[in-house]
Amino acid sequence: MQELQDNKQVFYSWSSYSRCYENRPRSFFKLIVVLGFCFSFLAYFFGDPLLIVVVWALVFVAWVSSVVPPPLVDHKITKFGLQINSLFLPTKSLSAFTVLKKRNCYLLRLFVSAPESEIFVVLPENEELRKKILDHLQNEIPFIEKVPKNEIERFGEFLEKTTGL
Image (cartoon, rainbow, N blue to C red; front, side):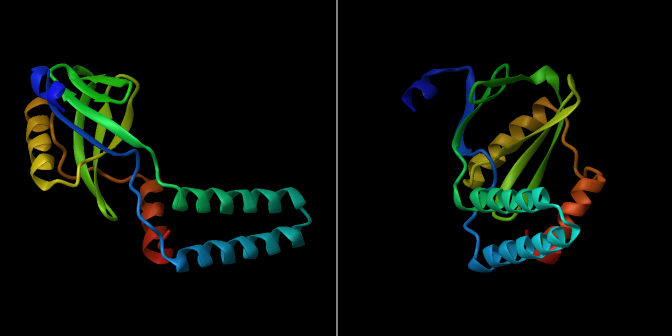
């Protein structure tokens, strides 16, 4: 940490999970297994054993992503841009950003102009540091208050509200 204080090119630094993570309740796992059995039952009547394997592979992936915590990632905001582990994003390549609240964490959604993509970064839990980071970013790149949602995001929110997935 002393090395970061001596380095004048790093404004802010924090570590966080690579995605939002929370321990799921037992009812979530029951729902996943019941859905797996229902889809397997349908696939059995369609006579496609490969589809049954695919259904249980998806159940396994959902279980693993819910049980295993994601790795910790180091983030730095420097004089020249944003560094996420070994990925460096120059400030000039960032077109805008917004902040999302998902479950128990805050996500920084960065819009990258070069390949027209988006990058999500988990912000620190510390309220004071989070406000400093957002204030610094607002001075560098435009902030979008409300981003229009595409069909996939609307479908994901519908699933989250109805089933808790």
